[in-house]
Amino acid sequence: MSKFNKKKSGDMPAVNTASLPDIVFMLLFFFMVATVMRQNTLKIANNLPFADQVEKLDKKDLVMYIYAGQPSQNYKQYGTEARIQLNDDFASVKDIAAFIAQERASKREELIPFLTTALKVDGDANMGLIGDIKQELRKVNALKLNYTTKKGSVFGRD
Amino acid sequence: MAKRAAPEVNAGSMADIAFLLLIFFLVTTTIETDSGINRKLPPMEESDEDVIIKQKNIFTVLLNGKDQLLVEDDIMELKDLRKAAREFLDNGGDGSCTYCKGKKDPSSSDNPDKAIISLKNERETSYKTYIAVQNELVAAYNELRDARAEALYGKPFTEMEANYKDVNWPGNKDKLKEKIDQIKVDYPQKLSEVQ
Image (cartoon, rainbow over all chains, first blue to last red; front, side):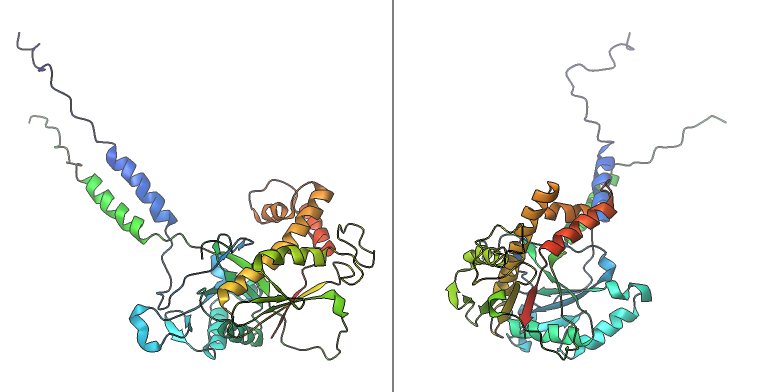
C-alpha cells in the first residue's frame, strides 16, 4: 500500500526554474548585440546641446569624430578653457589636418568622399573654437559636417 | 554490467553566470546619440568675381558674445526667429513665386530662390545658442518645405526624406527622389555663415 501514499498532501511543489537561464540568456544576447563599446575615453565634459531638426547619421564607419569641451574633473591641470579632443587625447587646432588625413588613409579610397565629420561639442564651449575647427576642416576639404546634438527642444531643458 | 544513467549536470548556477554577464552588458551599454544637424561647409577657394546681392534679399542674423540675437537690425527673442525667417523666405516680393503664401512685401525678399539667410556669430557666442539658432533656421526651411510637399504630394517633406533614407521602405525611390529634388528647387536652403 505504500505505493500510493508517496506524495504528502499539502506540500507545495517547487517552482520549476529550469527556463530561467533561457530567459536571462535571451536578455543577455539582446544587450550584447545592442552594445556599442565606446571608442574613445572622453577627457572633456561633453554635454551636447539640444535640437529638434535633426537627421540621423547612419553608416558609423564613415564618421570622424571631433570632440570639444572643457577638460573634465581629472584633467583640471589643462585649464578651464574648452579644448579639442581627437581619439584619446587633447589636441590643438593644428592637429586636425593630420587627424583627418589619418582617418582618410584608414578608409577605402572610394569611400573618402562620403566621410562626414561629426562635431561633438559641449554646449558651453564658445564659437571661437568651433570657428577655428571649421576653418581647419575647410582647408583639408572635409566639408561634410554634422553638429551632433541630443534630441529635444532648444528652449526647454536648459 | 548494469546500465547506469549518466549523472545529470547541475545547471542551477547557469542562471547566476548568465546574470553576471547580463549585468555587465547592462552597465556598459551606451545608447549612442548619433543624430544632429547636417551642414555643408563652403569650399576654400574663393571665386574672384563678386556676386551682387540686393540688400533686401539678405536676412541677417547676428549673434553677439552675450548670446543675444539681432535680426535685420532689431533685437529679437529666439522663439520669434523661426516665424521671422519663414516670413522672409516665403515673401515672394517680385511675384515670380506662384506658391508663396507671404505678404508680397516689395521691401523684403524677391523669391525663395534669391532669399539668403546670413548668420554671423562672435567668438564668445556659446555653442548651445548657436545650435539653437541653426535649429530654428533649419526648422523654418523644413516647415516651408513640408507645406509645399503637402500641397504637391500630400505628404510632408520630412517624412519623404525619412522614407528615402529608410532601407525597408517599399515604394519607388527614384520617383521619391525626383519629388524631393523638386521641393528642394522650390525652397533651396541658402544659409551662409560669415567668418
